[in-house]
Length: 457
Image 1 (tube, rainbow, N blue to C red):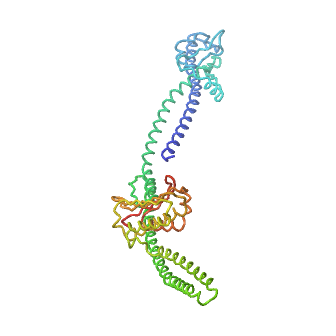
Image 2 (image 1 turned 60 degrees about the vertical axis):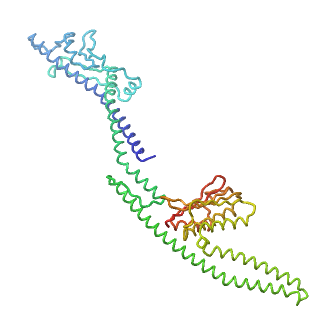
């Protein structure tokens, strides 16, 4: 998952938790507000009845301490206005058949769900009853007792939650949206950094990055740029070193070829001459001349086979013919030589596209070695019935030479790539030294080995 999506998802989780906490807090606050309304209603009614008490006391012109306010003199519209919705107030001691005076509870909110009412009742408990004396100086004046209607209180709490949750939900959505946009804008350069790392993985080490305002991302961008420069420098040094190693290897191959030709070639020629001489003169000097002549003939045959192997080895050790004959002619000779050895199968096709006349030097030698090694592997290590050698010169911005060998002999490209021998490893090093690439992939019915060699190398 992308980093922006991860951060937005975490932000949404945090917003949801905050919204849940706000809902719980609003529920508790709304439920406790009923207790505050109960206490306030009791206080207001007690103050009003205290004023009524002293007025009645003065009107009667006496100092009696007995109760002066029998019901229903205090049950007036003015007293109703002092009682909060959902709160019931009763005068104590109550008169006969006297009912509590309740505030208007209709329309204070919709009926809450049963689960809400049960949950609130179970978690927060019942509301407290509030008692307020009418006069602190006269205990016999009576007491105001205020209680809350449980159903009305729960409905009021539910309506309070609905009123607040809408605002909280809109704020949460706005915060989540704005924060997501801010996160996406802040982390937008991360996409460019990831793209640069991918291009670096493909070999484009010096990849410019846009300027970043975020300090942390700017530090990452600078680190990626420094890493790309170091990788590019290391790649250049590796290329130079590989070329130097190839030159040393070529010098050693030429020296080895010269030594083999001078030493083994001359000795084998001498052995062949001695064997021919023995074979020619054996019948005249010895009675068992026929057997000696036969042994000398076998020595001659073995010597010729060794000389043939030596010539093949010398041809591989010396410079490829591409440096002498040109790439096109050397490839034609290579395919013709393999065709002459395998007269029946497989069928070898040569497809050359583009102008190959001016391709020479190291590029031509490398292309020839790639074609030679791939043809050798296809012929020796597969059951191919058809092999196609395709040489294509690509012009324009690419300006490269493509060498591709495809066969229909089956095989697993991944296993071949992992278990590549000295031959493929050597040509891969040659191609890499010129700044190219070698790939092994699955073809339609077999394997495809392709090398891309820059012509500017």
